[in-house]
Length: 258
Image (tube, rainbow, N blue to C red; front, side):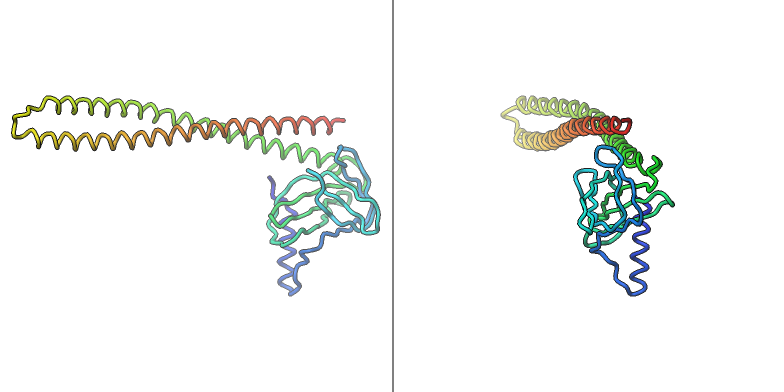
């Protein structure tokens, strides 16, 4: 997810306000459009928002709502998710003029996230009409690529876990063979030998040590197997998320090329 230049400007604006003794307005969600501006509606079509003052609200997924303060109808426009570095306690709306023709309305939220909608006063398809869909598609592709990288990393970790698991099996088998050998030697101790009790104590100590090693090894094996199982479950969930993103990307691509 991108950190927009707008958020940096907002932080600077807050800093300047504080340095001059004027507290930043952190509860204002009003923006003024000096001219009628074309935005993109949720269906990907061009919609004109007349000049005026608007309260900016979060709309349905991927949109912001522009509610006219003069009592006019509310308009939902397509927006893209963004992040910011401004410290705010409540939503803050800002309008930025990128050029003589292009503006963007940004709704910043206290959790460092936000939504931004691009508009064009001329209605020409530059950064105005097509940009929100294109930017959202780009964002979704970046999210998908990140998920695919997570899948690759998890698969690599499972491969790495496979090597020690094979070693665990061999070590466990070796310890069991050692244990069998000690038990065999204990069984062959002569009953009438005065050193038999001392030898048996030594063998029993060795068995205790081996049993502890076997238990520790089994704990390591179980931990590795659990990690591999958790990773596989994570991979399955990531594949589902990738499939969902692919469907959303395809849907937006179809809307973009209508």
